[in-house]
Length: 156
Image (cartoon, helix red, strand yellow):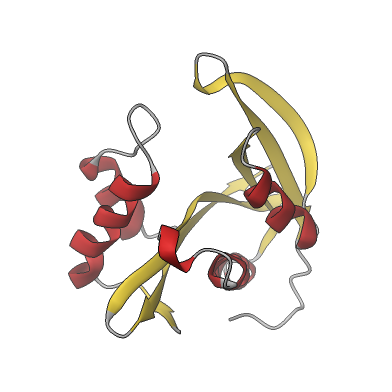
């Protein structure tokens, strides 16, 4: 598996994975996704195998009280690539980008029913910091997970 930064040529394949992984209303629109991957305060990592996009992750950061905070917009892995560590490695890559941006915290939302993703985040030291009812859709809660970053750790 090759892990590398996103390039504009990746957009069609990246959005195809988005369409597989999420259905409306949870799916990002094309315009919003283009905004995320091209923002100066974000990083997008690609997982690629044999020239095919296997997954991707997007993190963005902003200055808040107490320093810079990073937010993981999404980590998506093609169904046939799940269970092989792709999501874990993408998570490490976006954390590295957040550290490079000098973020002191990183956080995300995860569907309360997505137990596989919750296990991944907890295994990487994230703790549940809250719950938002109807975050994803009516009746689908989102859990807020957060982690303090050691900015002296080596960045990816």
